[in-house]
Length: 391
Length: 98
Image 1: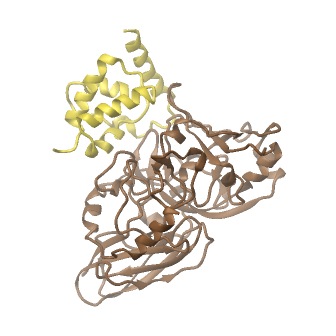
Image 2: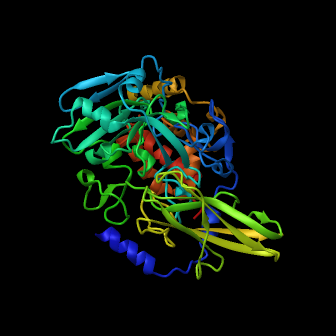
Image 3: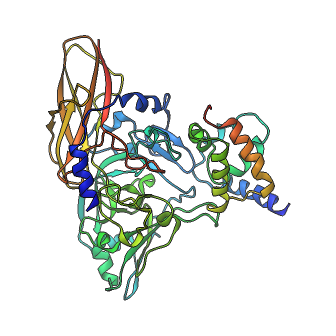
């Protein structure tokens, strides 16, 4: 398949890096504005309403991202505080429609947990050159958490998944302020909905989901970008044809046959197709760009992640990508979670140091040295290059 | 005229109904002709920081497209005679340096 060929082509291609740090650095927000939403700590504010807040680098250093530091992303401004006592999940299937309260869900189905990163499709959009419109995310529209809930497939089987099922459609309690604005409704291919890892989750890191991350229950689709992880879940429908809502057919789409990942065939067009899998990526969290390093030896560390295939290796280069050395991988938190890496830097000589880091997935893909432009600025997984200074 | 009044009413509703307005009260768009109508219509659905956030990627033509999308796709209550005032204002005050 084309995606496979592209992977191999990119692996065999030139690995020399241009000075990608320059434009990327220039695009980074000079003075991020910090603001604390109710029951969140201070996060980097992009917009107030609908709220879009990213996690500062300092809060991305722990294996599991704290609930009160986890990024917040909404499309529509009416976000009700859902009352768990009256909340119901309404699920329409082939044979019937059924409603569950939160207690019904907890009592009626096997409880399962999965550790998984949750990453916005547009994470790092603000670092595309040329720049593209949309929320100008830097590095922090991502977090890693343990999600606990019930398997979506167990719930769907209670209402009947017929042989003609094509997609499963999800709606949440948040709505627009105007009736004419398209409601945020998303769908999944039925196979992905029935995947054992796709959950209706009501806990995050062992605590009830925070309001801003989808209380009382949200969809968890490990390996796929966060656009599918519907928050404040209220309605689920199994449908026999492609769902034609705005947020599927006009938004969250990438050029067809350009990026690796699962196909979403019922929604695929000749020009564009829905974004699906998270691309292989990594982030140094121990140091920010421009950090001053002490003389001697300094340890750099961070996270690498992919679509759930698992990280094969993370390498670093100090010569602009001519040669690469392996880093040491940290413990495995689960294939959908991020994987730690660390490596020592020789800092005996004062002066500037440039370090690039790239991750390779077991699925054969590797971080790119040249971004694939796309109108919405999705899938930014450029090899990170840090300019540091030994003092 | 009725559409104008409706837009104004919706502006008030939006401010009253939105549960997450904290923080945005102090945002003021730059002085200029068209600032008031731009503030009134855009803030129905979103905080005004959306405008400054995307300014570095915008120009007059891009704002025209964006305002049309807000009306045609998202149902923004903007009267036809207001469109050019909003587009001119945004193109002049919130665009990338040429």
